[in-house]
Image 1 (cartoon, one colour):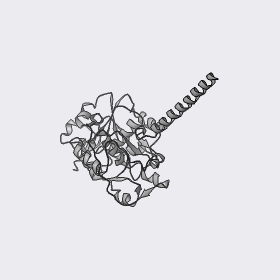
Image 2 (spheres, helix red, strand yellow):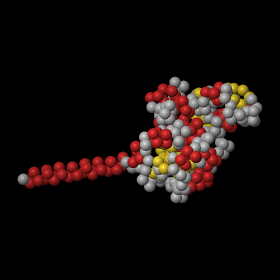
Image 3 (cartoon, rainbow, N blue to C red):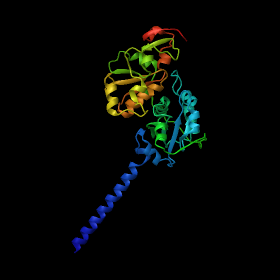
Length: 317
């Protein structure tokens, strides 16, 4: 009888411990810190009332501010394109720490918050530019909403209108993660490095020089770069991210592989940030960098002979 009672106690104890562990596991699995860089609409809707989740609508060019005021995800703050680009800068200097902290303060973001970024559509280019900037300043709990507002609204999820000021946050930026950013001198020094590969994220027209929307003095591309326009390379027609298999195929076909150092550039670092995000956070590349100055700097240098191009001089600026 004593043996049966002892066995019964052991069984009950084991059941209790299993239940307790399962409870901890479920709680841990649903915690903010467990979230991946990409979140889907179901997860975000489940966390709309979580005070540690801060949702930010990222403006685009031309501005989506009017669209934001008409409809946005419930509880989301608005990141203006001027504040974003003013903080990133043109590559002549590092992104501005004081400006970044001020922007986070105005958006109501605190250091430990889980920030979810989205745009009017999933493929709005500046959304992942904001992601790169926050990562540069060491923000760890950070996600991109796959499909953006377009997918969210199509699924009839909670939205609101108006432009409401967020309750100010308290934010102290970490030491910048310099490993994800390079300047023109670094690119120049690695043009003939067989272990470095350049990704041109602008688009085929700009890559070939047939398009010069920014009126650059020179048109074309940096020698050795691969034409991998951010939009057609990374996104489906509905604005959601392509699958891992699709992304591996398109980057791999160009020789952009995990064993290489990858430097992405565009006109001013934003489209390049989309390539960075896909390679680093979807495909798991460990050595990806953004050349923030990009073609805006490289294509307009006065010392033309030092910075080679595949293209021609047009002197339109």
